[in-house]
Image (cartoon, rainbow, N blue to C red; front, side, top):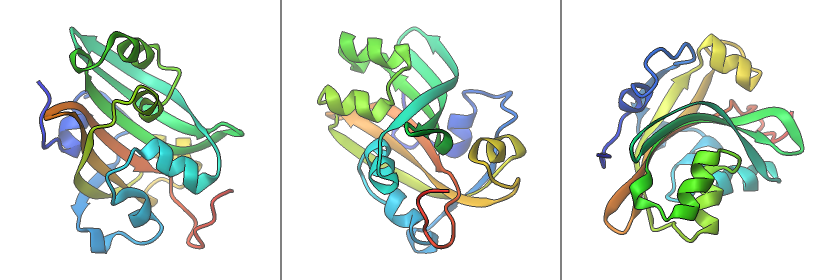
Length: 186
């Protein structure tokens, strides 16, 4: 059963042997600098948000997944389609597949389309609840994915996507570090 108040630890607990786990602390919105705050402090799908920020579509790369009945969890990277080595977001999700129509369930498990895009294309966006904003210090592995230094600071969020009143997706999203100038392309 999904919760309406997931935490960083709760979601990372889905993959307990993860060597990529960064350190994270919950922060208030006023502590999140631009452009991270604009990218995270909202109730929209991150797929659309990062595509608008970077000026093009993103593709998903599934790093790990697990399934127990209707509960499906996965760890992913989003990379720019026009620059596939440029990873712009890390994510962990736990999904109640029982809340999804068959076509959505199949597309999610297939793992070829970002979750936000699948939900939008199938009109499953009902309500996104922002649970917390995070200040994150990158682990060595996560830094490698982002092309950053271990220990570099970035930001993320934890949220829940509802279908009606039912929580359907718990999500942790961590952005790649963004240059101080806010430059969108490396």
